[in-house]
Image (cartoon, rainbow, N blue to C red; front, side, top):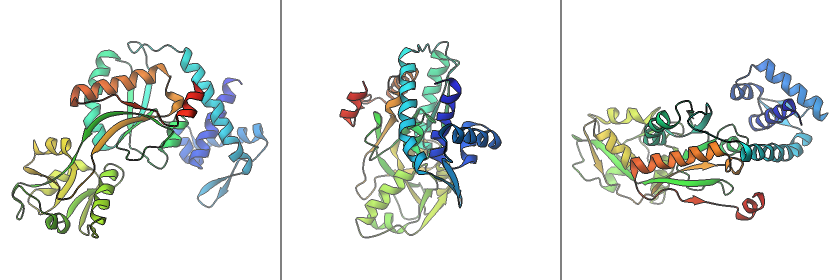
Length: 321
């Protein structure tokens, strides 16, 4: 297998994940004509159309679906062989790592991580992208992203993971709130308007709050939807709006805005933030170095018990070693 064929196989995996020439082009930082040309090469290589236009997406042929698993196994095997033999020196490496993290994870972890990188690995770059939960596993599996930082209540069983820090959910309100004076009642929580964010920044927080309220046979009817959680503290000032968010972020906001931090009047789960990666990256020296660096950054900044690596799908994992 030559370099061009390996490149084609990687493009094939991205096309199968995206089912779109334009989105594949964007992910690979190629033009659409160049990506279409690569798809044509793949069709000639495998003697099959592979992906055919269907409404707003590309539909995979039976041949393409059969090939996908085999191609992924072949590419992952090649990457594992290269990773085992490739040395990684953070002091001289110019590698770029792609990580997804929600707004909270980026705020809590990246500043300390960047300070470490500037000292230990001045030419290494970390690009943080917004998470895409629906495609995250495929992105990790095909190498589009290197790792995911997130609060995953039910991680995909075949992913590796390492706990970084714990947090808990609290509520915030303006210090001059017309009804709240240091204590939030359940009826206030259910009846007052909530500031919540669109997109994936606080998707898990929104979900667990909705689940907790649903267990009471109720739902939150009055919500203000904002793009970024950093807008929330300013939106609460002078209003009766409240918000639910992790304690560490609430303390950051309260240091700059007139806010009171309140205990939620209903049980909410512990926030457990971790880093997640695919087996294909587990033995990569650079990837291993970045995981340890993120772990040290989290421990330095937040302390606590970090660094517990969980292994799921133990039989499959053992077989790959």
